[in-house]
Length: 349
Image (cartoon, rainbow, N blue to C red; front, side):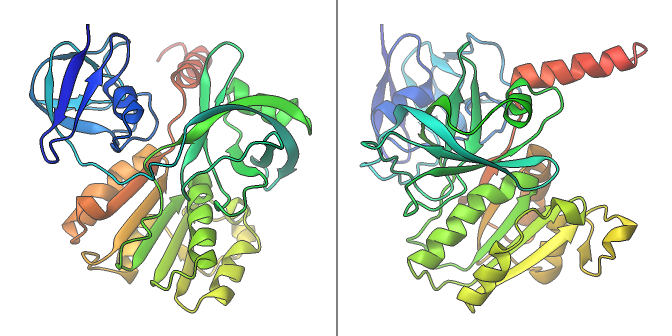
């Protein structure tokens, strides 16, 4: 038996079938709701339950919830529901596809980041919005999500930046075993993190590590379409060797007088001889822009960075309606393995 979900602000309604999450049902009806990791960890898809009952058949979500909040990527309806949630505009012509692909080219960008270029079948093109992501569907059914680093007009391939995660079987495979022309299976495009082209507000971007990947796609797309809004990218990494994009930031600055770039190192090596910004990337952004109420803010990187920055940015005037984030969360089985390995190293824990 199915149930009906109503969104309070818009009056939009959609039916939820047995066995599917609220998010899956909304996407099936073409209703744009915010989401990110789709495993209940990032908090992007939290909504307020005004009436009705939900359940979590796969276990409680990892994100902390206040009373009345639900995680729509994990929640299943147990009655008709009334939700309060921010809707987003998603191009109705975008179709989520499951496709075979080939790892056309692998290139190390740094000691722990691999660029993977995926080639789709000749008869296929994946329409996506700048900043969205795809998921690899592994042979055992598990999934791994990675942001698309190229712009939509560069549709001959999909560019991914994959960081090696100790204990991660998939990233280990990418670094140690995967060869050019390896066959893979993907689903996409996914996610509500994309460039809002219809806004007139200036843009601030904050990346942590490989969180630069979707922002690279956004910047390339913005410059391709001639977007003339001021844009400032802050990229935070640990040391100089982690700034793995060697040419792109300089090209962006040369292409547009409206574009600015600030790299930030949290723990530079003495050999780096670094004279630029140090510390937290969030602090560097706020030092340059103490009042950010008039900006669209895009954040991409580790969940801890985004969780720390969001309330602080709000205190500096940023509106939640104009803060967009993509939290890079490890898959649960990877986190479990890391925890087991750590416990094995220190049994007293």
